[in-house]
Image 1 (tube, rainbow, N blue to C red):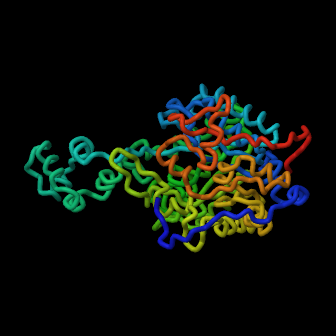
Image 2: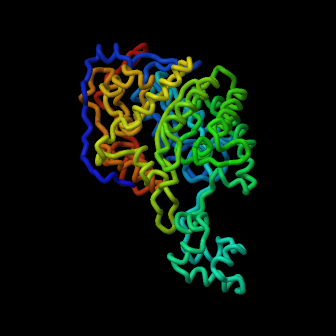
Image 3: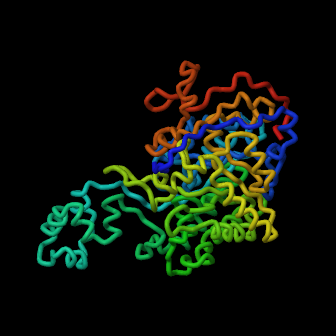
Length: 494
């Protein structure tokens, strides 16, 4: 991952730890409405990809246990991982592209609602992504993948060679020669692996995205509703298809690129199709970038404008993130795929404890506050979820008090301690296991390994019935909070 040059060491703090009465009277533990859905309180576990599914994208026992463990901490809401709306191979990532997947997802929703005593709401994050290939061996690239066009032959002086000889000559040029004769897109495919973008209108399936995506999202949302989810979060963030339509780098010429109004057109059409499919009685919102954090990308002015359009369209919530783009990703090794969290934009998404002067905590607060202010000025009361390095009650409460957001998302902190919200509500915040922001979890994600936390994945490995990682060395869920009091059935962490 990209590292800031300053390398200042930061440590998480516990902040002011409330007694139970203060916690229960706080904004953080007050209810909030997301359209037709009410959360008992304002703690939110954002989507994280734990790589617990299988090659068929099914709900496995590991998937069920992962989310049930978060649910036992009784957050206001959990958003399950980015779940593919197409029924296509995508590694061990959950899918919702076919009706056959509904039964497994229903098993998941029931497990979460049971584990939380019905106190936690469960949403699914719906995602589409374009094709990306691994970085090839140069010989393979020149012999099999490179299109030997007349223009390329002309630039390289290979007009009179047959195809095999021309390809051999190109390979022999070496890196300096490749940079001179290959066009930018071919050079990128050689150096990083081929990657489709929304600007590839010469490809029929890319040109057809505006027609194909609304029904795909709509049918996925219908399956999610039928599976018992309480709502859906449309994934319009990071390096994926819908975020790419919103990006200032979107130069499509078909009315879906260029201006802000054209770039937001498909995201609004997707939402309209989802709403038409499932009706007004089920919560639907989106996650989008407050700032792309790349050269030539969208900034907070764009995002504030987008937020207003989403709110006016009737979305039930808006959740913000930042960065995480392929555009500035680090070059992968040969045989590996580019990872969108290795460049500066990736750092902005998941900063670590070695940071610049801004530190890893709350880097998205100001931008999120500007988006929320724009939404309020437009006369909309759509709740806004703020995330980014939040790890204790005092910080979360301050964000709410200042009107920076309406709900507080904690991903890495929830991973470090799934019980952090419940412990805080009970006046036992001193027992919270604090995330150290080493990004150990991010390193596992980058390798598509089962994601765990170094603060607990080697603890109590002799626990009866424990499920471990593929190599048998790490536990897959946090140890239970053995000192947790039994709550009466009518108790509400709110």
